[in-house]
Image (tube, rainbow, N blue to C red; front, side):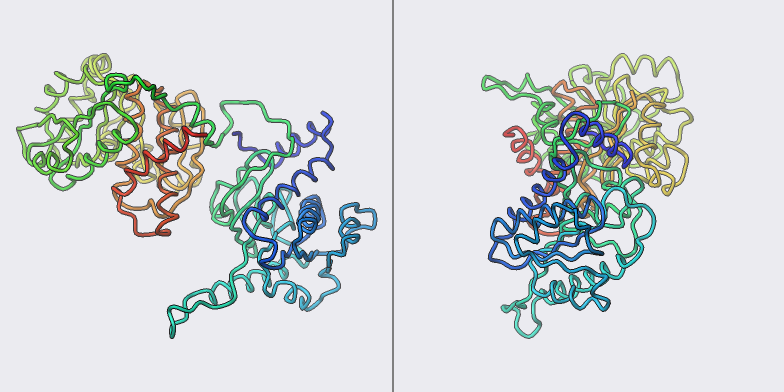
Length: 541
């Protein structure tokens, strides 16, 4: 699904109007979509719905939502920044339904707003949409500050009462729903006014916007819901950023026919592990299995083999005997002897950064020998490089010229900064542009991890993974992701598609666990069974 700027959205609306779906029709569909989000989450008898109405089309969407909710039996109250003009059809329809309508210009102390908010079940923010740029003006800051103060105070009251942990406060926090954008959030830059109200859900229309995925404003969006309003769809330009959708992942995932056998789903060789990081390769190996690889082999130092074998009875092993604690250059010959049998290679989980391991990477990829690199490119299957594999690469000048022919790298921002020879701040300031630029330069797939992971192809395609989950900010989740991608590569998926699907399923598994335990407390191995559940759910779409 294309991600668009505010200007692109205005053009799409204009084209849609010219094609026969008028602005009024689009507004009707937008307001109906917002109302439907409320209906799906809050029963009509649960309380008042307060809708904040702005002066423009965003406010018009809010008026339409108010009408649909009132017709379905909800108690609705509208609070506007100022009066709507007498010719406003949607405002007049609400008057016929006797929906209360208060304007801030008639409520100087905001007492009317406070009265409407008291005990409400939901607040719909329809003040400003994609056209909002720069700081909020007029009475909007004061209105939003009052609303935020109410929401925050009610949120505090919903905590368990200290003197009686079995009794909860009677007041419940209202659901906050933003129409298109939380008011004050810039649709292009992700900057946000200090008074912007954090949404639980944002209902946007036709296409997601840049600002939905760029921090700091992205933290105010909540769950993003993209509603169909009959918008003409933008051209599928690969150079423009897209967001991964369940439907896209469904079309890309490999099929699992009933007459399958393990040979149909490929094999993965995971090379990694050291005395300090014995668990990382195990996480990667199991992740590859969980996403359907037919066979996974762990190549690791002899010193950590016994524990790995005890914990992974499903896995075969390639044991490197020369050093019990680290992989050395002597392992290269063993890898070369067997690697042609595998359909995917993963290098890096738990590898460590010992000098002898650096020599292993050098000889495996021919990092200092052009002829050796040429030979390696003929031998190595599609390859994923992660973790210390990336850190070891970054020590070599023009390392990207020695990568296997089909390769994906999975850096977090710190690793990306080392690979680019820049600061983490520079990477994070333009994640999409940084990933795209270097994927093209390095001629490999780049998976830049973090909130809204960025997947970029050597052809300059960029897909954003629509998950920002602090639960995943814990050691080991990157090993799970690398193994997930390798497991899909083994099944003959194009490496860029495998990267996108692996990152999406990894993020979805994280969302499943977040729903169970909240935003902290994950152990990386808990994601593993959820990967299989995520893939199964996507296949059912």
